[in-house]
Structure formats: C-alpha cells, structure tokens
Image (cartoon, rainbow, N blue to C red; front, side, top):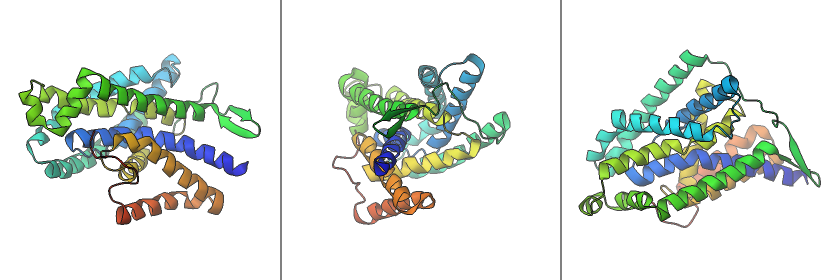
Amino acid sequence: MEIMQFATYGLINGALYGMVALGLSLAYGIMGYLNVAQGHLIILGSYGTYWLFRLWGLDPFISIPVLMVGLFVLGAVLYVAVYSWLLKFPVIDRLKSSLLISFGLMLVFEHIAILLWTADERAVTTSYSGKVIDLYGLRLPYIGLGTIVLAIIVVIALHLFLNKTYFGKAIRATAQDWEASQLMGINVARTYLVSFALSILIAAPAASVISMRVISPGIGVEWSNYGLVLVILAGVGNINAILPAGFFLGLIEAMSVYLVGAPYMGMAGLVVFVLVLLFRPQGLFRGRAGL
C-alpha cells in the first residue's frame, strides 16, 4: 500500500506539471516561441489567487475564471509590447530571441513580485487543506484529487477548442502555414495575438493549485524548469502528450523518493531528461510536433 501512496502523490504532481507545461508547448507549437518566463507568470497568477482569497474569500478553484481573464489580458499586453515583432524572423531566430527576451522578463517579474509582496513565502489555506479521503488505507488528498480532475478538464477543453471551434482551427492552420492561412482570409496577426494570450491564460489552473502549496517571488524558475523538461519528454510542440509526460515524470520522482529518499527526487527527473535528450530527442511519446 505504501508504494501506491507514493504513486498517488506522483500522479498528483504529474498533473500539476502537465498544466504548467501546456502554455510553453502551445506557444512553441504555434509561433516557435520558447517562453521560459512561464513559471514566473504562473507565480504572478498564484499571488493573484492568494489576494483574491485573502481580500474576498474567493476559493482558489472558484477564482480560476477571474484569473484566466487577468492572465489573458497580461498575455495580450506582453505580446503586443514585447513579442509581436519576432514574427518577421525565421522560426529558429524566433526561438533564440524569445528565449533571451523571456530570460529578461523572468528577472523583471521576480523583482516586481519582491517589490509588491516581499520575498516571504505565502500559501492559501482553505477549509479542505490537509483533508484526505481514506480509500482502504490509501489517502487521497482533496486538493490532489482536484488537481488531477482539473488537469484532465483543461487538456480536454484545449483539445476541443483547437479541433472543434472555428478559431481553434484557424490557430492550427496558422501554425502549419501562416502565408496560406492569410490567403484564405484568416487574420494572422490577430490569431497570433490570441494564441500567445491563450498560452498565458492556460496557466491559470496551475497558478490556482500552486497557491495552495507555497509561493514566493523566486520559485517561478523551478516551475519553468519543470515545464521545459516536460516539453522535451513529450516532444517539442506535441501538446497531446503533455499530460501523459507529466504523469510519467511525477511517477519517476515518486518512485525515486520511495526507493532512495527525497533528496534524490530532482536528480531522478534530471537523469531521465538527459537520457531522453541523448537517445530520443523527439520525445517519449508518439505524435507529430505542432498542433
């Protein structure tokens, strides 16, 4: 039963990793941008969740729609002010430039967070924090179950949006060939704007869950690292494989804790990451890059 308990925690962490990585994979799959500031944007969202809870008592899960609106607006502003000019370059140059720009944004967001909220660690404590469901000796945390359900809902919603709606199909068409899309009457500039804002908006569920763990200005880089590792494990731009890759990474970390102890949890994920880069750089899961 003990190994099942560790596996459960691994799946919970994996679901969160998947939600963190979705925006990264989406931005790269559509525009060729690598936004390593995603983790810091998520932490800004977590602070938003924290203050919505402190000031108005809004539950972190209930506050997700409000957070999505705020992050969408922030993403749109960032795109117009910082990223839009990169589209005139080839994809490889977009990748390099967006990487450098987002490194700079990481520092900006971290210092803004310190100025506004200091470097103190904070967390949202709800009425169900720490509560579990005991299933024949297997302890299932309320928040953990909510995290897994939320991750599945987010992935399904994104899949349906990209494949069943007119604008989602326009995004996919633009990602595959923007010139042909423009000839077919698609507003490419608007599509890229909304796509980038969507890649930030989709971080809202992860931000909500992280607010119930621990948040501080400097922790964004840790979540960006998890996102990057997951994008590589899933295959760059392979959005459909993000959540399975998250579960895989979470289970690897959980089993390393079970077998050799907590200090080696991060090392296990890093070893898998390096092995994938060396022997299967296209990712662990079948599927094509892009959308």
